Length: 121
Length: 148
Image 1 (cartoon, rainbow over the protein chains, first blue to last red):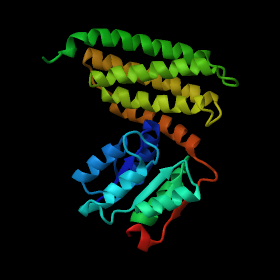
Image 2 (cartoon, each protein chain N blue to C red):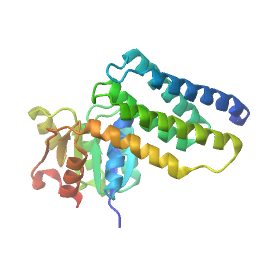
Image 3 (cartoon, rainbow over the protein chains, first blue to last red):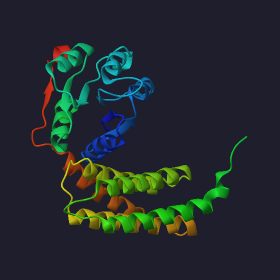
Image 4 (cartoon, helix red, strand yellow):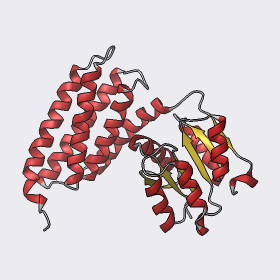
């Protein structure tokens, strides 16, 4: 069974990059345009991993992660923050929200694949 | 009341054809060594408009390929990667493919999906190179605190 990943980012180009990279690596990837869209998709479907940007309209990445954690079927789903911010404060907030880890943008495609493999195999 | 957009289809085809011609002309005007930011911005706008109107009429193959072209242009515009002559070659090739597919949609002839996907992949590969950061970093929290 394929591993399904939800990529949440308000930047269409970043979403395309993430999807292109991960699909080529054999993963099934769905897209969401912001945190709210991501939450709606996570409510209706189980994903093996959620990758999310932080700064987005309507709902940011941290809020998305907190809400996703509250969903019974996503209580233990790994979540990675794909963000331009790598400050210690941001990492602490991500950790407190329940994120599994973080990856700084702009990302190296192979690094993204490596991190995803570490998390979901 | 529903709007039947099919009656506007001929306008779309004329407009899209014009946009692609403009895009080709402007790409040829770009100076590889010192690309004009305003010119790049205008080309991006034209590609974006082409993609949006194609989506409106349901031609998502054109939209997806246009989006890949727009992404590459945007990264050049944003200074994420140095402009190279092979990029212009690829962009012109993309315009050629888009034009051929546009005509196929207009004339009801077979769509060459492989050609569209091939040019999209070429554009994406170039754009991904722009996003590759030599010092990209990541971190994983302790499994016990990460919900693993």
